[in-house]
Image (tube, rainbow, N blue to C red; front, side, top):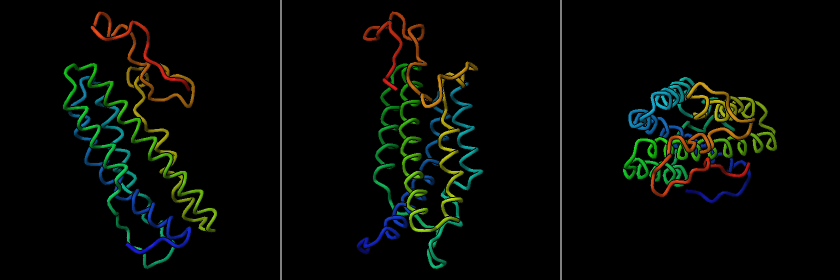
Length: 191
């Protein structure tokens, strides 16, 4: 790979990362849906898959700083590692509730990665004067926020306040009651 000498070079590099990432996510989602014990979680993953396919499974094809740039990816070690960790978590889960909780955490990591990267691409596109590219990337960034499989929403409940989607507190003490090593408190992380 050539050395990156400009913000445009960084933009192109990250765009290729995201192309690869979206293609890998498309491969992982059916496996996650198949493994989910909860039918609601399975439907959430299937919906996410459908939305990702509808978006083309990659950053918008029209996002090119110049006509010679092909829509092609390059291996993205970050998403590769996140997805490998998720696959490992699925293999190691010995309990259905633990499996579902782990898959939600892993899906959350993927979505947060996507949101951060698309946000960066949009900011860089605007800085580079690529207004059309920024506009084309906006739906990808919004979709990442909106399509996250929120566990409360999957069970038909109202989700926590905005910005707290997909947090492990959905796995309350009732699901883990009486299990060795589990806390009777709701699992939660600071906002």
